[in-house]
Structure formats: C-alpha cells, structure tokens
Image 1 (cartoon, one colour):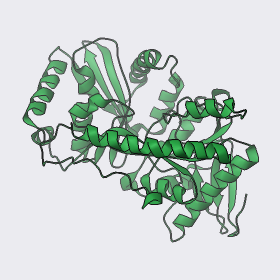
Image 2 (cartoon, rainbow, N blue to C red):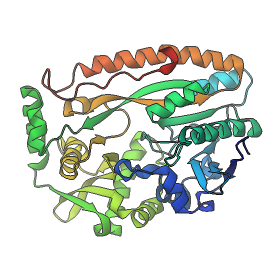
Image 3 (cartoon, rainbow, N blue to C red):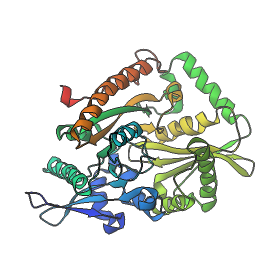
Length: 403
C-alpha cells in the first residue's frame, strides 16, 4: 500500500520481519515514558512462545510505514482476529448482532497488545515535524487492510487520549471505559502517601498491612539477573491457578515467561511471598519509564489481605522508591478504590464500514460514554483521600467531536 506522499505501508506476518531497532525507535522514542508492552522484545516473546499466531486467533498483520527516504517512519501492532478473547474491550454483543443480521463479524482487525489491557500508544511514530501525518497514514493503511481482507471492522484498544481524538477526526467511533490507577504525588515514603488519606482509610490500610505480613510471611522483590527459572516456575503456577479459576483456560504458556525473562529482565519485577522454604504467592509486574504495571497474581494459600499487600501496597512502595509517576493495576476491581487507586478513563476506537451497523454502534457508544463518565464521577467521590487533598479525579476525557 502506498500514499500520494510516496510512503509505502508494508504488512508483516511476524514481528521477526523487522529488526528491533527501527521498531523500538518508533514505539518508544522517549525513554522517560517507555512503554514495555509495545516494545519489539515483548511482542516477539508472545509470538515466539506460540501464544500469538493464527492458530490461537491472533494472526500478526503488523503495519510498517516506509518513508520515501527508506527509513521506517512508523509501526502499528495489528492482528487479524478470529474471536474476541483476550482483548478486555468487550464487543461480543456487537458480534452477535452483526451475525444475526447475516454478516460475518470475524475476521476483524485489532490493534492492541495481546492479552494485555494496558494503555499505551498504538500508532507508533518517532518524533518529527510530520509525526501527525505519519500517524494518519498508519490509520488509513489499517482501514485499507480492512477493505482488502473483507473484515467486518477495525478496533484500536487501550490507546492514548490524543490518538483517540486523532482517530475520531478520521471517522473512527470512540469508546471509553475505566481502570483504577494510583498516582504518585511526589511522595518520598509510603507514610507520605498515607498522610494524604482520610484518617479512617489510613488506619484500615495500616491494619491490612499488619495482617498480611504478621503471619510469618516474607516478601521478596526479584528483578533483573536475579530472576531464575525457579521463580518463573512458581509465578507460572500462580498464574495458572488464578487463570483457571477466573478465565477457564489461561492464555499464556510457560515458555512465554522464560522468554520474557530472557528478553527484558530489567523490565520485570516479581513480588514473591515466601513461607519457610516455599513460595506461596506472587505477582508479576512490568516496569515502564514512568509506571509500574501490575499484570498477574496468584496464591496457593489464603492469608487475610495478602492480595492487597502484594498487588497494591508493595507496588506503591516500589513506585515511590523508583520515583515512578503511577501504578496501573490492571482491569476491573472497584476494591482498588479504597487502596488509593482512582478511576481513570481508558480509550478505544472502532472503524466499522457497514453503514447501518455503524449507526447502531455509534448510538450505543454515545449512551455508553455518558454512563461511563457518570460512573467514574460517582466512584471518585468514594476515594480514600482527604477532602481537598491530592489525587483529585482526572478530568473527563475531552471528546473533540462534541466540543
């Protein structure tokens, strides 16, 4: 595919078809906001482990923008999907409606990080005066791929707000949801964070931490070259236990965890819980340039408040110590609110070429956006922070289409 500006869009059936350096130059041009999930190493680990391939319903169709000069001017992680599993932006109702009307909803195209509800860039372009133009070329290239493949739709999930608005201007339908994120207001210690909370909430968290760690349990932070295969054995067992109960069949295999540790060990933080000589619980976190991302948790023993300690309070401790701006603790979970994690908008954008189906989805999304915003405002009133203190809820998303 090419444009009037002589740039060419290439479609790759594997991340291996492009070297890491040009991909990462576009995916993470600023180390301060480094997002590990769109790095070449992370996406390659998913493919090399066999978790992402046509047989699992994730056929890579990555877009590469080749400028007239021959340099790689942009990239877009993209997949042809034969189902909607592992996405966390739910369109099962859309699929049912489309197929009830006689259409084939699958295959569809999806730009996202497989199995990973983490916000981040999707139109990956390095800095430069034509940055916005290159983003637009990637988006229009993906739309053209919908036409060529005869797909029902194109979905861009968990993208940034600026990208969301840019795609809205190109005619994509705009959707919102929410997650619960903790934000670092310049705290030097965990006690500084506690001081920002209402007294009752502060006492509750202190009690939860005492209860979690007052049972002879020990916490270990393991990262970088200290991570060994026995750590991955334990973490995978925790992941499988939780995943089997929550999802029925976990998406990732054991090999992925080893590949992750080999490819990007300094981006991994394992928070492991030891009882005697055995690991009994643990959480896998990924370290970004300005954020700690909580991904998977599991436990073989029940201990009061241990989940809160390992997944939320230890993560806050780490983020404060490293000067990170925030902790993103994954999808769902209003129980995070009482622990300092506030409702934060997430964004997705959707291209639907069928006119009547597009109108129906557009009407639905207009109502849904209003509901999500009301729910976010309602939940924010129950946050643990002192009235007039920090962690004021973020402003509502700026929907430029309605300005």
